[in-house]
Amino acid sequence: MILISYDIKDDKLRTKFAKFIKKFGNRVQYSVFEIKHSETMLNKIKVAISNEFETKFTKDDSVFIFETSKTCKITRFGYAKDDNSDVVIVE
Image 1 (cartoon, rainbow, N blue to C red):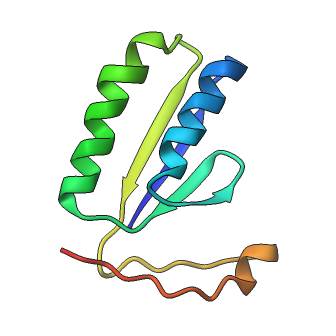
Image 2: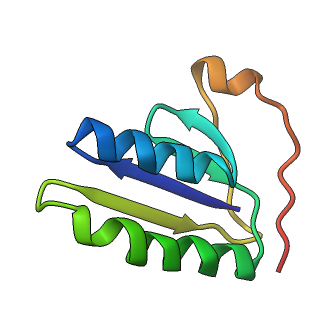
Image 3: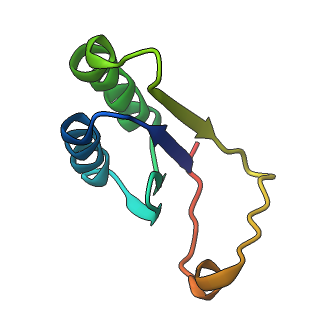
């Protein structure tokens, strides 16, 4: 699984980026997506971000991709703690 977190100042670009990432996974917070992935999917996301979005980012924008491992522990609080969906990690 990967987590993608972003902070993009421009409303139009942020909306376009969110719609792009939503094709791959579920929104878990306003600017955070959880994606069950394969290496191929991860590479596709990285290439698209580099080619379609990175040139439009300003010095105020950021995107983080967190790649989790088998030993990753997830602790949820608030509404998220009721999300008991299975997490499958494929290597």
